[in-house]
Length: 318
Image 1 (cartoon, rainbow, N blue to C red):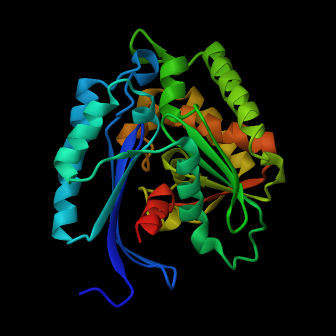
Image 2 (tube, rainbow, N blue to C red; image 1 turned 180 degrees about the horizontal axis):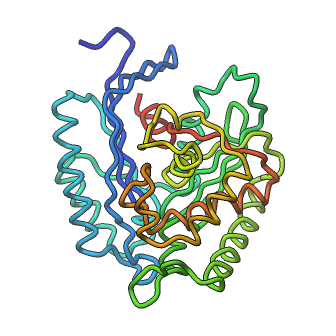
């Protein structure tokens, strides 16, 4: 039985590379969130969307299979309210109605295909709500959520001051610059890396037109590319959420890891103990996005958060 003041909610975040579920008991009055279930499945919904403009049938089926698993967990935990947020891939696809119908049939809720700015606001809330009172972290924060298809930038103190989403993410950059004849370069050539870097820098210039990146005093990094870089920096024997959450990774570490990932083969990246199999081919691009951001704003370190858009969605439901 739920304690007074708490609501049991489920938040689903469906992005370009992964779909994730958070079930939690949330008390808006006290600001307390008690996690009951948090899981992630790599479904690569955004497979070839950048090239074709459509969601591939096999990508839709992988996503629907994950939704069926999540629906079972939601039923078993007797969730009161569910919110399903869909981000970059489904925003861009011509056949997104097919995706919406499938999710509605399985989960009984319609996915909200939110704007990049809405996505950024959820990420900011999820990442910063528990940082209040931390005297060692100077405001304003710059929250950066490096996804599969897009990256969200949010500057704020207690509230969002400015936000912008740009179309650079680990999957989109990999498919645009590192895939040759249907295969990811192993490892990429110097000219491929240079083209990818130029694309990222152009996107950062675009973000700066809306978001005062240079005003940030603490960089908070979210999502799988950033958390995986932290796991590598700590040389973790396996992916460990507790060790990663609120860890700090220096600019020098991010640069060394990025250069190593860009030099490595598929087999070498797959052999990293903390590497999720679904990130092996896209982690180098994600790390380069993070490095480019840190160099652009002059950040000495990134504070890594495991709490992100999912937590923000859960708060919005409660």
